[in-house]
Image 1 (cartoon, helix red, strand yellow):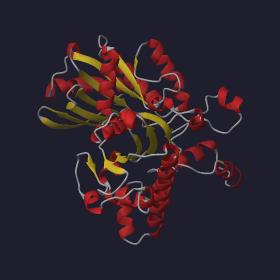
Image 2 (image 1 turned 60 degrees about the vertical axis):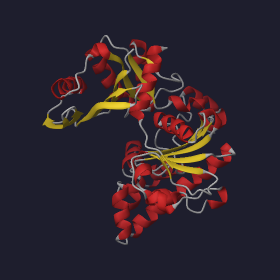
Image 3 (image 1 turned 90 degrees about the vertical axis):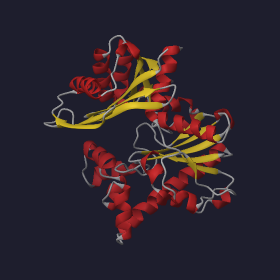
Image 4 (image 1 turned 120 degrees about the vertical axis):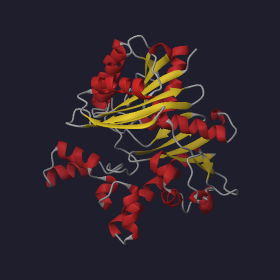
Length: 397
């Protein structure tokens, strides 16, 4: 049976896609369409003849899927629907309803739409991609892989907020967690690197990108994670605040006259590293530090402080930690962040080797010292491969 999966990650104005052989793990082609619905769209396709770049209008997600099919036909590889095992879709919010990858039908589409209230910026464009792809590939199974499903194993003590229980029940208020596909892939890969079954190891995963989250994984199961009801809670991010006193929102509403929409925009779009330093890209923050920018120095100190707090918290929750692993854009590429995020934790058995840490590589690798009781890894995430594997497993089941 074929193991080819077309993986689609549909955003509000973009479609990322990749053709993956789930058995071999190879990415055969991929690309991204950006600025959908704007006067001029941006298109990149990596096919058999290298990278193709185009600038042309893309009216909507349906037109975007049609463009993707044209790119496969013109630049390869040939996308034969009869040879596709599945089309796998990233969906951000599946609530408590979807605990694993799910074959998509009309009822599943409806349910994804209903959970949009908890992910209004993500689920609707995810649905746009699903509907366009189901129309383009009507004879191929479509599978939804949810960011939240890996975290449905959280115990009640971890997912319950200390608010009025009836209000929480009526409005589905709880910790859901996000980046689950990445955390699942990385924690399992880390176990393999240790030569053990995932059920035998405890891992703290630090997914550090523009969006950032931490997860405690006990025996292959998520037991605590930093993002909550929404992706706003937890670590300091590129433009998102992460943890704060909830009364801050009430205070700014009263004394600054800020509306809910203004507060939402501030916490999600102009806070985090951008709000603290003036820069959302960590590379720009480092440059500002080198130039003597004190705001950037403080921003990084807050960033590291928050990560250390979560590492200590999750260490206590797990009781024993076999590995800490960095992943995603910053986690994989930024040796300065990695070094400072775990600095001073030697009493916990965590020791980073500065020489190993400074090595630039796209491969999974150990960056801790030989004497470190906790092994520290860098493991590149591969959400597309994880979605492809999950999709194939559902179809083959």
